[in-house]
Amino acid sequence: MKVVAITACHTGIAHCYMAADRLMEAAQVLSIQIKVETQGAMGIENKISKREFDEADHILLATEITPSESDRYEGKNLTIVSVQDALNHPIALLKKFK
Image (cartoon, rainbow, N blue to C red; front, side, top):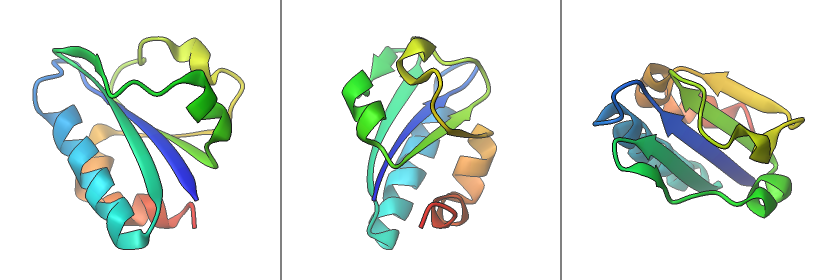
């Protein structure tokens, strides 16, 4: 299973990066292939391509703001959660995709 995720928050200093780490750790535990793009103070990091969005089985947005370049996943089935949900319940979130 392939999951792509974007984490983004208002200040983009810590929470979006911590959420990305938690999602990657949870994916490893659940044997899920994941790529997480962060949109923080440093801009877009680990950018997900339109092709990767197209090939993903599931798209997760863990955001407090509208992510940049949202046209890459327009018309796709998205799961949108808060950054706090990704931080506090990453395994439960990803289990929904199995």
